[in-house]
Length: 150
Image (cartoon, rainbow, N blue to C red; front, side, top):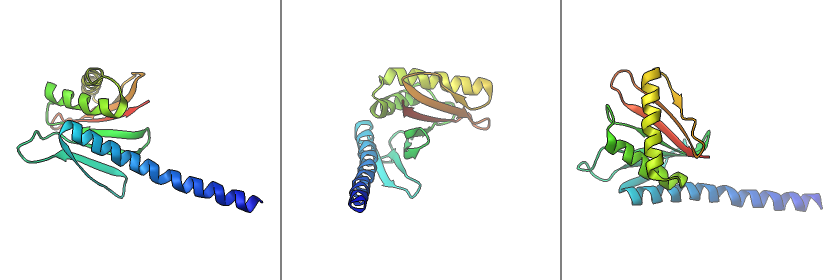
């Protein structure tokens, strides 16, 4: 009896794991299509590159981490001294992942980067609608930002 129950439980668990992988890949494709990027293949580390379709496009991109410490996470690296256009890109792509308004994410990203720059260390945004952490390079003023839903 227990042997049959164990087999049933293991088969259910085995069927759940691929669904999560497909969900992450589906989310990567959704973000890429809505923002105008290409979604790459999942790497062995569980990340999917979202990159510009050609060299003439803006040089913005992101990685979707399928197994981040905070769940599915978008990671961004800005150009040096990121401007308003980059924060809007973060807002639009982050809204697709989290369901939070793009403008709220863009403002949160600006605040996070500014706090990291002023403190000269990584900064974790205290917002309750999403999880955001960022840091700014002292060499070239590039921001690295991570975003996940709550």
